[in-house]
Length: 85
Length: 242
Image 1 (spheres, chains in turn yellow, brown):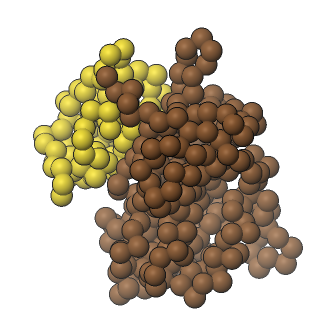
Image 2 (tube, each protein chain N blue to C red; image 1 turned 90 degrees about the horizontal axis):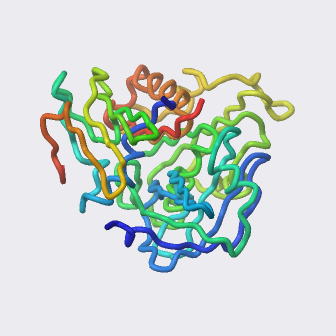
């Protein structure tokens, strides 16, 4: 797995599927309850896509899997998302 | 499904910035303009159809269809060696963007701005400096720029010009080799260097920190410890790498 980056790196791939910019969307971690802009979360790039971890407790928030024909978003560690904050 | 998001840009000019990097100017018809600090995804397609996508910050800002990137060559990189060494005027690349509205500065923002760059992390901060310089903003800016040696400064001449503004100070930190007569020995960026450049807490400053992941996280930790910045006012963008 490569060096950690952050949620800024998700802007491009998610722009394919979300009308609004996702890097300023606030996500709430299921594990610790921390709310933060997606841009602040830790992101690990992988040949398959991206693993997003909570900047506070390091739990997995989301996995972005790139596949032919589209993207699979596994939102296992996110309680909710606030757009337009 | 999503192919319409990609725009084709044509290289107009490339310029050597440092021994390992170049800036690249491109014309991108249909480019909607961008805010300072935004980035683009660049897609390269090989003859066999293999594609590689990488994110690069924009040094340019405004509503022109002429954009500028500046790319540092990563020794083990798949894309950056091509962009730095092979790309020529007339070559075409595909772009998705502008991207991101988190790590951005707008001329209407009113808080004093502390910029801290490590190496090629200067690129999005350069867009902020240009946006600041070409607007009527009189918000004070400070740039603290960590480079290995004097030869590794991106946009060196332009920074000298920009620093003539009464609203900007530019301070360098040299990590491997400093210019002759430089007052401090080369060293990684320190608490003291950051504290010396910082605004007062009462000024309610904001900060943008960009560079390799290790650099960004070290600097951000120092800045939180200084208790000058409210934690949420320190915005970071990590390039990865070492």
